[in-house]
Length: 249
Ligand code: PGA
Image (cartoon, rainbow, N blue to C red; front, side, top):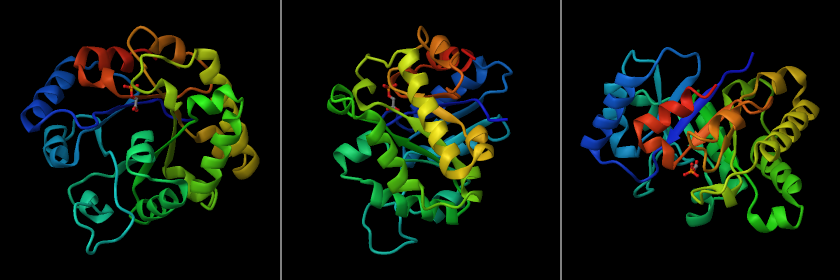
């Protein structure tokens, strides 16, 4: 059966000392729970995060990764560099990467291939913009994103894929999809995966919701059948808020 996952995307927040403090708070307050907890600090603090979460049942993920194996790509980070320090999970396709760094699904398909080649697990983010929803084009947009970035994968590859549906209009805005809107889209996504890859892949796939998930709305969103967890931005930066979302299942 598919896993419940709550992942904290720390974005460009927390310096090294603050990373240690937040991890310590999370460790001190977290309760035994079958939900997987993932934290994604910035690149420079990944090694510290790995060290400070050793044997503590917290997964450390990177927020991005370059598609090349290595080479003259100033400022970039490779899959091999990440795995060499013990990072085996990577977030790809976050809407901020798409919007500010011009990442598109063709590029993301290359990143996905490289990550899988290195046996990394991918949290693949996608979702429509406000205009798409207003034009009632959101299902098409989501289907195209998944097709262009992921539908070249083999059935076996999907063991290492987690999806994160994040409507762009809900990220960092305080506005969230209603639990019904989230469920409607998650069900659409699971049906699509079922059609393309079969029911076993669809049923095993964790589909996270992201976009202004907070302690006061997490429980209702997570109660929906096809919502298997959340990708949390703002509320992941405070241990109490983050853990109350983790405990919302
Ligand atoms: P938010 O961010 O929770 O602050 O809306 C979610 C995300 O960017 O993954």
